[in-house]
Amino acid sequence: MTDDVLVVHGGTPLEGRIRVRGAKNLVSKAMVAALLGDSPSRLFDVPKIRDVEVVRGLLGLHGVKVTDGAEDGELVFDPANVESASTDQINVHAGSSRIPILFCGPLLHRLGHAFIPDLGGCHIGPRPIDFHLQALREFGATVDKRPEGLHLSAPNGLHGTKFALPYPSVGATEQVLLTAVMAEGVTELRNAAVEPEIIDLICILQKMGAIIKVHTDRVIEIQGVPKLHGYTHRPIPDRIEAASWAAAALATRGHVEVLGAQQADMMTFLNVFRSVGGEYEVTDARAPKLGDPGQEGGIRFWHPGGELNAVALETDVHPGFMTDWQQPLVVALTQARGLSIVHETVYEQRLGYTEALNSMGANIQVYRDCLGGTPCRFGRRNFKHSAVIAGPSKLHAADLVIPDLRAGFSHLIAALAAEGTSRVYGVDLINRGYEDFEAKLADLGAHAERP
Image (cartoon, rainbow, N blue to C red; front, top):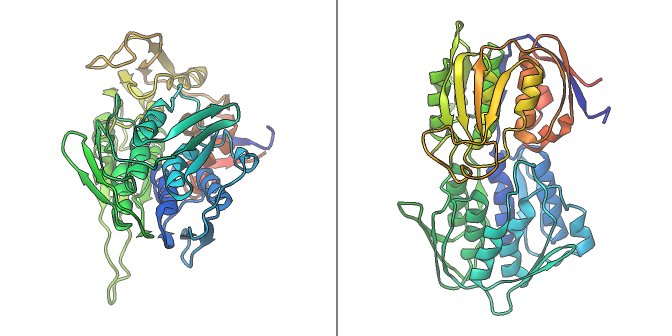
C-alpha cells in the first residue's frame, strides 16, 4: 500500500481553474448503449477514469472494437462483430465495477444470452441487484445464479412489460431503458429515476432510433423497435465532480473555477452552497467568432470570508440533494458555526467516513433516527443514517484510509483543510471517478505528492 498513498500538506486555500468532462454516471452507460447499435457510435468528452477502462475492456471482450477518436476524450465504438466472451475472461473484471449488470439487456438482444460476474463498486450499503433481476424476468429473461456469477438467457425473446420500481433506483431505471428499447411491444416503467444522467441516456437512445416518452410523475414509456443504429453524443458534465471541487474551495477558504459545470443540473446543490455561506458565479459559454476566441462556460466557487452557516439537509433522488454531494460538503460543514443536520435517505451505510473526520478534530455524531423533516425507509431499521455536525472545528492532520470513492474525496478535502501533513492511503480509488485529480490539485496550488 506504500505506493497507493498521497502525502497532503494542509492549510493552503485552493485557488485556480480546473475542468470537468463527461459525467461518470452517464459515460459508462453510454458506452454500454453502443452495444445496441448496428453501426458505430462516437462519444466525446470521455474522462480518463477507471470505470471507463473497465467498460472498455468488457466491450472489447464482447467483440466491440473501441478506438480513440481524433479529439482528446473521443471514443469510437464499432459493434459489428459482437460475440460471446468466456466466463474466465469476464471474471477478470469481477468486483471492479457495478456496470457489468447493465450489459444484460443489450447482450440478450444481440446474442440471446449473457454472463454477469460478481459485482464490485463502493461499499456503502448492500445495493442489491434484485430490482435489475426482477425487471429482466418481467421482460422474459431467465436468470440462473451460479457460484461464478449470473447466466441469463431469453429463449422466447424479450417482450415489453409494465413494471413499477419500489424505489426510483437509477441503476434499475437504466436497466429497463437498455432492455426495453428493442423489446417487442410497449414497456411502461413507473416510479422511475429521472436524474439528468438518465435523461441524457434517453437522449442517446433516441438518437439511436428509440421511441421513449418521459411522462409526469416518474413514468417512462418505451416503444420497442426492431433495430437501432449508432449515435454521436457529447455527454452532460459531471455534476458530482463539480460539486466536490466547490466543497473543497469552501472547506479550504479558497476560490475555484470549474469549467464545464452547468447551473441547471446543480440547482439544488447551489442553493445549499449559498445557504451555507459560499458564493458562486455562473459564467455562460460564448461561441468563438471573428476577433473573439469565445469562452467555455462554468461556475466559480469561493469562500467570501467570515463564518459559514449551519444547515439542515436531506439527501434524495433527483431533484433532491444528491447523496454523492453530501460527503464533500460535510467537510465544509465542520467549519460552520452551529449544528448542521444531514439525513441520508438513499444509502443506509454512507456515514461511516465521519469517523475519520472526528479523528481529525471534527465533532460529528451519527444516529439511527430520521433527523430530517420526513421519515425515510431506513427509519425503523438499525442503520446510522443521520449525522449532526457541530462546528466550527479546527481540523488537524491524520493518517486516513479511503473506504470508497466519494468518502475518499471528502477525506482528501479534510486533509487539504487541516493543519499539518496527512497521509491518505488507498488514494488510487479516487481515480474511479475523478480524472487526473492529482494534476488538478497541483493546478489549484495544493501541496500534495506521492512519497
